Image 1 (cartoon, rainbow over the protein chains, first blue to last red):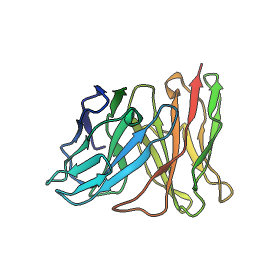
Image 2: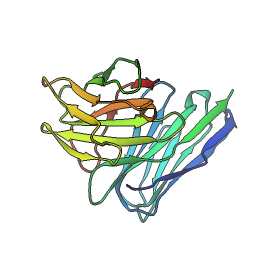
Image 3: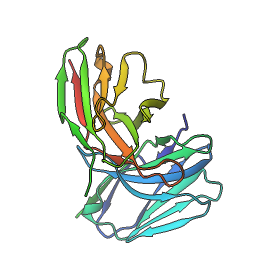
Amino acid sequence: TQLLEQSPQFLSIQEGENLTVYCNSSSVFSSLQWYRQEPGEGPVLLVTVVTGGEVKKLKRLTFQFGDARKDSSLHITAAQPGDTGLYLCAGAANTGNQFYFGTGTSLTVIP
Amino acid sequence: EPEVTQTPSHQVTQMGQEVILRCVPISNHLYFYWYRQILGQKVEFLVSFYNNEISEKSEIFDDQFSVERPDGSNFTLKIRSTKLEDSAMYFCASSEARGVGEKLFFGSGTQLSVL
């Protein structure tokens, strides 16, 4: 089992602020995904990154995969209340394709 | 848009009882998964299933758990004798292909409460 630590665990910010959440591991991943989960719902895939150093943008969200493929970050610009939710990273190891989830970051954007 | 559906949305059972959680994966998907999320904790992998057999299972998935694809559309998780610590949200997921870039689609979950 690959251990993925996310930080911070909880984040509460004002609308319009920027934020970054982190996903770190000692393991190397063949690919890493970010999900957003709302209460009472299943996780919804936001992005998949596969190449070390890769940066992907999804509107106000910017995802980066570390050069060594052990860590990733999610940056949100000008956060909106609709961004509120639990953000999860999930990694698949080189030796297998099973995705293991991180500990999650619970984001609250206050209007 | 195709989606993974799970029933029931909530299940309450007595300790020691058997429960079956049901899932209908997206129709052209070939890989199926069960995950669980205990309240306030992370999403944990239970089992993956492909070609009518288990591909991989975690240490959580012990002899009390089993999965089945009985009719080509449903994918079920059975817990034979529930324990209090089985209380969690159980998510079914499916994907079209495995490997780098695999896209998992999750259902809305079944909240299992064991009393």
